[in-house]
Image (cartoon, rainbow over all chains, first blue to last red; front, side):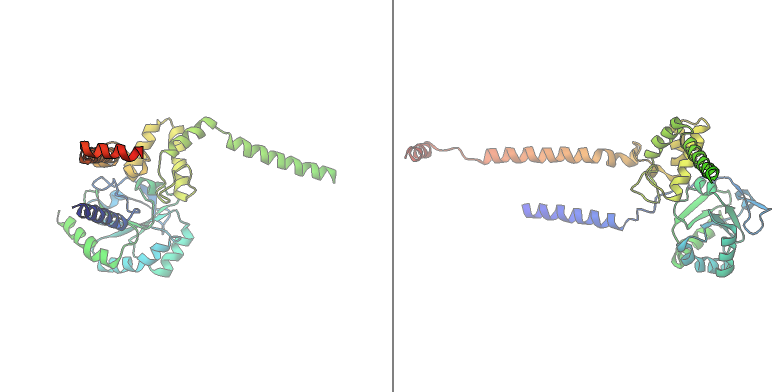
Length: 174
Length: 146
């Protein structure tokens, strides 16, 4: 009887720790899901005299991807985004976060530019409004301008197939 | 020669003064910024507070705190601003609500369970200890005397 109890407690503890170890402490649930995308108006990376606001894409389901030329994980993610933009599933807009314009442009030239355009957030102010803390981060924004999904860390081919494309299709039907 | 040395010296003094002035610009504001920053978690280096961390984001967020306090926002408003963007996780003292009950009361529940099990066990041991019979008591007395 006693041995059974010790066994049960032991197994319970082990499974608790096993689950705990598998959780990713970097993935903090965003409070922004279900809330309107924070407003901004930023210069466009490629055309400094033009500005872009999240309102410009109202009525469309779109993907907002935070990137920087200094971000190593963005490089891993980049081919996936290039592939995704070719599929034309949804407009992909970049937020170039705390970067130098020349560096950012050179980076896009070298690795390819999957973005319709990138908004240039030099001091990271808009990043703060979007709760950015681990570049790259990716948001799915619906037709009414509400954030429906956030990914912290690189987008993978698997994530595109299993999550992003189905979600975009679903939101397009709304 | 001497005058050049003097000029150089003067420049150093001036530079030193301006640094000192910058640092002591508003000690009260600095203190308030640090107080708020110790309440907040740095999300890049999760086991540090915003006050301790020198990560780029922590510096940006400290500037954000400073700006808002200087603009007249209250400490509460600044904390709310951070929670709206980064969630409850940024707070080192999580708020009491349905999803955090286990966090707040779990340890006390475990303590009470432990005390209960301990009391039960002690009680059981006490009742399990057999009383000596009269014959045994006499024998024990005899043994002690020997």
